[in-house]
Image (cartoon, rainbow, N blue to C red; front, top):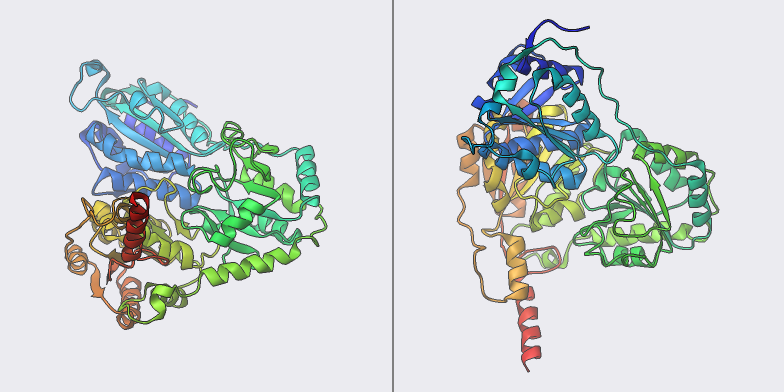
Length: 569
């Protein structure tokens, strides 16, 4: 049925409601005032951010957390360029997301009008689909396609530009049906081939990652692993696809991988890569698998046919969504696993050893033991706590030592984007306020999007922020000392009083410098967020020399100097 005449902005907001949108993130702009007006009378919660990068990160985190497209609105030009970091993250992380950009009027286009950009060119390699809606009567069509594209196959971001005059134009047009995500599924013959390969194996390994996962899919793949006695690893920043306390979980395959797990990946005779792209981070710079033909018999399951065979020529390539393939694997008749059953317990023991207190803290000289801090967090917080982080060496303390529970308990960018930590934590708490949310953020990381603490206060998001303050861009400093030992350049930071900053925003803030101080500070933060429904920040002041769990900057520098001296001699 055709609706009475509506403005373009109203048609768009009505379409959002048709497609089940309950939350949108953004920064207001005069280029989409009619959308803002239509949102006023809708049942969509519009979360106002302080910068478009934070808004886009929040939308991306929403997509990760819910499996539904995260919605973001920004204005043209500067707003769109600021938001691009979230779109890039959504693309590399296979996260459903739709970015709406206010655009100059069609009568001003191609004149380099105020803040004008051709978004098809700007976002061409950064999104699954980029388009501009020039006629109000076509809004329902474009919206339906946007949701369909963002959620079908390999999920990802869509960008739609909204000319200002189109939004105020009126049209009589019907709404569409709600979108229906589509995924391919394995054939019975493919499952039969996978089973035959597994039956011939001696050292199989299951590697999980990527998008399209659901609770049911995770439960199905767990049943498959249990029935066939498979050790299960998770790809870089997809550690929550299997409860890390499960006997079959053996660690994460990514940056800073356990060397013994890396050896198991290399030595596997059948590697079932279920979902991940097998990109640079997951393959340790394409070293765990030889390209283009791996030494391992590789089974690659991925929702995008174009990803299959793009880098690695797997022996068996299956285009499928996670729920479709996991369901068929769970129903598969198990194979005789006697040849490798013992490897599960062995690999689990190697993981436990990898997660023990690092040697740098065993002598007790470090005032603040970051390993002990993670143990206290784990003991004090619920199993379904959501951990968020961005990029930096500080994230190692979460990746290596935290035991992630069921999905979705990890929100982190596989794109390696700095600035993700704070917005993703705020978004998670807004979307699922009943859950505990803890954000790990480096000092450099926090200063990129820390203004979203104001958003947390405005919306009563009681996130616990842990700010790792070592006064430097630590990851770059680590590489700097390895390549140019002793020549520190561009990596030093002068930081504010983070605890006082949190208080200035209206939250709770305190700083700790010793292990003994952390437990009581955590208890106060938990109580504050519970009773006040506001954020709490704990600044961790520690020696920047302790750069990773396995190395100090002094050690890295000395080793690099020794290598250079040997080459020179």
